[in-house]
Image 1: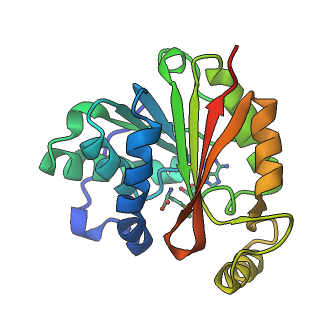
Image 2: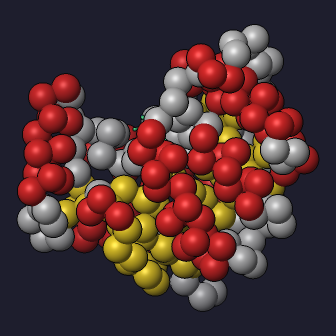
Length: 217
Ligand SMILES: C[S@@+](CC[C@H](N)C(=O)[O-])C[C@H]1O[C@@H](n2cnc3c(N)ncnc32)[C@H](O)[C@@H]1O
C-alpha cells in the first residue's frame, strides 16, 4: 500500500548529487531500452530523484517506485512535491514497500509490470539479498521483458578502475557483506530468470548500465 507523504519541504529532503549527475546519461539509455514497455518497477528508489526525472521524461510509462520501509516517506514526499511541480504525477506511482528479502508485494500491480529498473543497489545489498532480488523477479515473468541495472561492476573478479577498488573498500568497511559484484555472477542469476544480457553500456564515473531482455518463449 502506498503511504501518505510527509510534510517535509522539498529542499530539506535527502538529496544525492550523484543522481543529478547520472540521471541524463541513464535516461538516454532507458529511452531506447524501455521504448516498448508500459509499466516499470524501480527497486531501491532511494531519494526518489531518478523516479521523478525518468517519469517526467518517459511519459509513455507508469513508473512505480519502491524501497525498504524506512525510505518510503522520503520517496513519497519527493514524488508528491516534485511530481506536482513538474506535472508528472499522472505516471509516477507513490512507493510501495519492497524489501527483496521479504515476501514481494503481489496482487493488482504484479500482472502489469513489464520492466524493472534498479540503480546502485546490488553493491549495497549482501550476496543473499542480490540472489533474492533476482529470484523475486520471477514473480513478474512471463510479462517482464526488460531489466536495466545501473552501477559499478567487476569483470572476472577484477576492478575496472582504481576508483571502484577504493569504493569497494569503503563499502566493505561500512558493511562487510556489501561490495561491487562480478558481472558474470549477475548474468548467471539473471539467466536463471530467463533474462539475457543484451547490452553492457559504459557510463560516466566507471559505472555500467546492464540491459537484460527476456529469452524468447
Ligand atoms: C545507494 S542507495 C541507491 C538509491 C538510488 N537508487 C540511487 O541510485 O541513488 C541503495 C538503495 O538500495 C536499497 N536497498 C538496500 N537493501 C535493499 C533490500 N534488501 N531491498 C530493497 N532495497 C534495498 C536501499 O534502500 C537504497 O534505496
